[in-house]
Amino acid sequence: MPHLPLVPGVLSSGDVLKWLAGNSTKSLDIIAQYWQLLAQPGNPESGDFGYSDSDMERFGAAEGAEVYRSLEDAADRKVDVRIVQHSGVYPDFDQESSSLASGRPNVQNVTLLFGKWWGSGIVHAKVWISDSKDVYIGSANNDWKSLTQVKELGIYLVDCPSIAEKVEVYYNNLWTLSTLNASVYTTSVWDDQWQALRKLPCWSHFVPLKERCKWADEQGWVDTIKSVQYGGTIRISSMDWLGQSQYLKQTVYWASLSSAISEVIFSKNATAKILVAHWAHFIPNTDQYLKALLYSNILCNSSKYNKCGGKVEIRYYEVPGFNDTGAAVKDGKSTGNVYPGYTRVNHGKYAVSDVRAHIGTSNLIWDYFYTTAGVSFGTYHPSLIAQLQEVFDADWNSPYAIPVEPLQGS
Figure 1 (cartoon, rainbow, N blue to C red):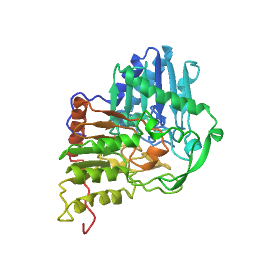
Figure 2: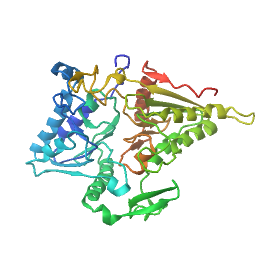
Figure 3: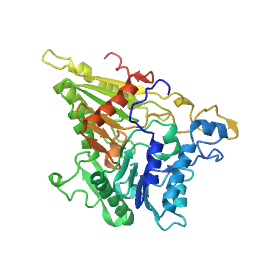
Figure 4: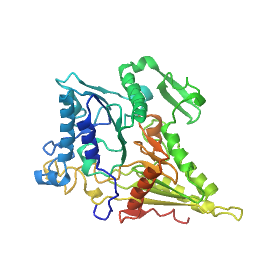
């Protein structure tokens, strides 16, 4: 993407993951949605199929192989490697993690299916913890394409045992969950908040809200939005945005983030800048929800009694080539695609105000906060806030960001 300026201090995801694996001496804990670090241009079932060796070299597929080799090297150094994962994606599911564990007693991998516990949802977090002190939390999957063909964003913490230990508590909870029989520990309850019958772990409501020691991921997003100062700017970037559930059998309406945005526009005269990815797998009714949020600009000035000076600006982010992704060959015929499947997309998920930054792994859809495992990092550190603002502004001011037009007649 030649029109994007480089932001000082920002590292590539591949370099960070290789560093974490390469510097592990005792333990390496990984949460992964799926594994595709090794490209498969010869597999007819893969989105890589049909591309030549020179194509794969141009795409940077070797970066994934290097990350995988760094994991093998760590395992061969007798580092204790633990992996919690979703079942993976077709055609190989969790073959790479299984191969990593094969013949290596110091490597353990477990598959955790959230559908058995919450009725839907997946392990969607992307987390690496090295030696209980170095951490990666971000949007990058264990997929070669995430390292070179998808825009990702994460936070990389070195020698931060206090934070690593907190993330490790979450990790160990997932690990324990994978050992339990969901049929014994789940129940169905009527959720008054979302007006839906939900399957849940039986302990979910046993802890009073005021006694909980950590914020839910959704609350971190809301609090970051509401932290914006009077007349300030809240910047939000996400691959997906949807004001409802996507995978639940009974559709749930979800306005937590859009309501928080409207509140700061009205009460704090704040500006909200929102970047949403427009790509090959764009969710069709995203546009309607974003246009509904843009209507806040009309409401803000709808009455002589309003003293509202805030506004919402929304842009779609298009990575060049997003419409030409997929296997190069299908059913023996050329498809005309020029990039592998599920690439050429801005996959980061973060928000940054004047005083707070929030970097997460969840798409901005109800399911990712209520039936899916995600991890987020929030901070009030001025230099991290400034750096994240710079990353956002580079994208916002680039030719890849296209304004979302309001509803006709607005």
